[in-house]
Image 1 (spheres, rainbow, N blue to C red):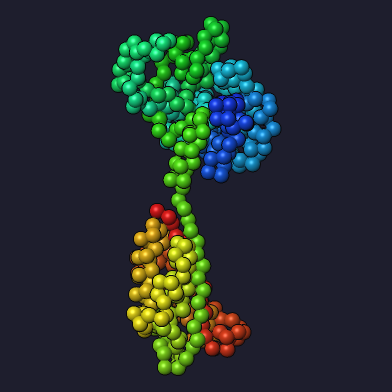
Image 2: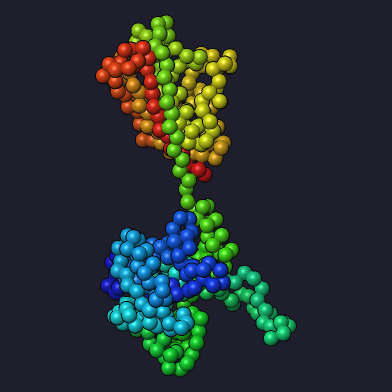
Length: 391
């Protein structure tokens, strides 16, 4: 909710039929990255505005109300009936607001669901300080004027041209009066800024964004999905489990730390059951198979090797595959010896090996109440969960 004295409203233009996309329904109901375009557009304004009026066709009202009810937005939402054109629809939305003259109103196309928040905030600041703010980006293509037969008349000076986007923001009274004047004059425009200009309002352009794509053609939705996939971090989770038999004549190594005990773990390497479980979890999260695939127990190269060295190689492989370590949780199950006094040192050793902060590694120890092979002190098992971030 805005902390400023004036209230901030949004008129969301959502009356399109999606005919140019061949969608067979209003394009705002199409999904982008697993969410409807309408829901994404609504969520852009969370924590910024006080109220939204969604202007829509009668046949879309029921579905829109369902999306609104599940949206979780904190601002007030109401619906207004769309008109014969976007201009008529926006006027209907403004009439339904009943806002104070000095309130700020942003008009936004519901089909623009990737508008960066900083663009919205810059427009609001422009409205407060200058009375208006319209998203725009400099034209990058050469623009030419042509006659009805497509012969070029002349080339426009691109340095003065801008592609206009939404949101378009104004003080409420200023925009409302502009729309009333346009209606009386029979003036027809394709955006709110043109309506305001017709009424003599000075319109200030605010830098928009190339990501602020309006879904009009099928290709636009493809681009939006690509941007969402690019911008959304991909978290991966893996689970690891390992068990080793206890035997005489071996050191007990857990998480790279030697723990005094009469028995040690039997294995091809140092049999560090906890680090083996962790490496399995890491490889699993990165879809790289398991520890046996990378460090086979049939290879003399790994005979008696420290699992700390294997862990260093494992994290190198994971990072080479495009992942970064996020965190790990390791549980060691052993009846004896008592492991908890060594956990802080274990955490330091693992985090040092992974070049991460100690807060990213958690290690726990438990007994099995003398149940199972752990309880009979025949062996020690470990489980690990690891999360990675796809870079």
